[in-house]
Length: 560
Image (cartoon, rainbow, N blue to C red; front, side, top):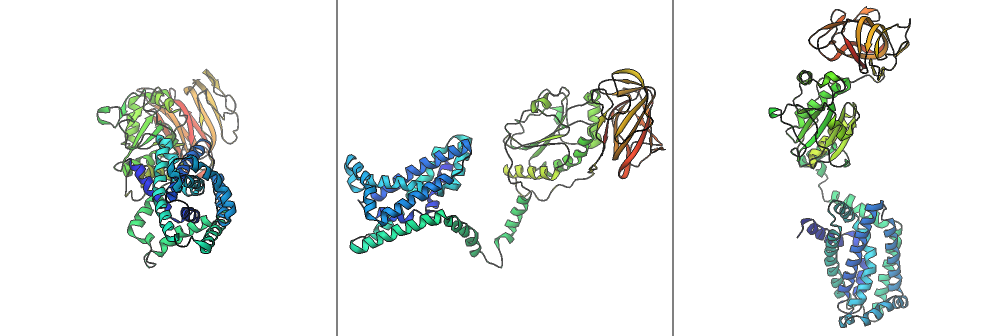
C-alpha cells in the first residue's frame, strides 16, 4: 500500500476516536440502534462516501480559489440540528425518512435490513463529520498540488474513519438494544435528539473548537512531571534551539535556472564548470557580485562565514561574477580579487551576463537560495538581512535532513555602512549624477568647476576624455566633491602595464587615513580595482579634492 495512504487510514481512525467525533456520535448511535441489522453498515458507508467527496471537493476549491471552510461548517451545524429535531420528534423523523423508505423498496432485497436507508442517513452525517478533516484537508491540498493523488488520500482517510465509526455504531447498537423498547426507548430517543440539538447550538457558538483546543493545551501538561516539564529535556532544548533559527516558512518560486554562458570557473577541481543538477541534494546559495562593487565586498565576510560554518552540513555557495566595467572581464583581475578576499567557494565568470539574464537579475549584490530539490526559496538584493538569510539557510538544511546545526556562524571583518550617505555616482557620461557645473559628456574637453559646491555635489576641472563608463585624465585633471560619509571609495584604473597617481586632499589637507589606500596624501594606481580614499571616525560632511595624473581613469564613487 502507498505509505501516505496508509498514514491517511491511521489518521482517519484516530480522528474517529478523537473529540472531533462528539458532534455526530449521538446521531450515529441513535440511527444505528434502529432499523435492520445492516443499517449501521449503511450509515457508515454513506458517511464515508459523502465525507470523501466533500473533503476532496473542498480541497480542490480551496486550492483553486483560496476559499475557507466556514460554509461547510455552517452546513454541518444545520444538518446536525435537523437530525436532532428528527430524532427528538418522531413525527418529523418519519417524514424525513419517508423518501429513504421508498428508495429502499426500489433497491435490492438486502435493503430490507436497513442498508439503503442507512446509506441516506450516513450521507447526511458525512457533512457533519467533514469539519473534522482540517488537518487531512491541508494534506490533501498539498498532495493534490504535488502529485494529483487527492482522491486516494481522501478515500484512505475516510476508510480509516469508517472502520472506527462502524465499531462505535455496532457497539452502541448492542448497548441500546435493551433500552429501545417501549416508553423507555422513546425517552432514550428524545434524549439523544436533545443532545444533538444542544451540540448544534454549541458548535454554532464555537464551543467545540474551544474544547478541542483546551484538550490540546492542557492534557499534555497533565501527563508530564511538573518538576521536569518536557520542554526542559535535553532533546527538546536541542530541537527548540534549531527551530529558533528557522523562519515560519519559505515560499517556492520555481525551478532555479542553471549556470549558462560562463567562461572560467575558479575554486573548482581543474576549473571544471558546475551545474545545479549535480548540486541537487544540497542547499545552494547563488551570489551575483563584481569585485569593484563595495556593496558586494561588504557581503563577502558573511558568505565566507556561512561557507565555513555550513559547507560540511550541505550548503554550497556559488559566486557568479557579472562585471559592471570592461576591465572586470579580465580573468586575472577576477582571480586576484578572489585571492585578496580569501574566497574558497566556487565562482563562475559571467562576462556576457548570460547567467545574470537567465535569472532576470538587476542588482549587485543579489543572493538566491535554492533548496535540495532545485527550487528557489529566497531572494535578497543589496546588503543587509544577514540574520534572515542565515535563518533561511538553516531552515533549508533542516528540510534536507541535516540535524544538530548548532549555533550561528561567526562573521569576521564585517563592516556596517552608515545609514545616511551621499548616493553612488559615476564619472562616465551614461550614469553621471550630482555634478555641478558641466556634466560629464562623451568626448575630450576642458571642464571648469564652480567656485563653491553644495552637499552631495561633484565637479570636474581641467581636461578629461569621457566615455560612457569612465573619465580619463588628460591634462591638469581635477575633481572636487562635498560628501556625507564615513568611508569614501572610488574605482580607478591606470591602464594595462602602467601605474598612475591620484593626490587626495580632505578638507584642505592631504589625506592619509589608516586602513585606506592613501599613502603620503596620494594613491598609487597599479591595478584596476576599488580604492579606499578616506575613512572617518564617524559619518560627517567633508570636501574632497582629487588631482589625477595623466592616464588615470575614474569610474564610480561609492560611500559607506
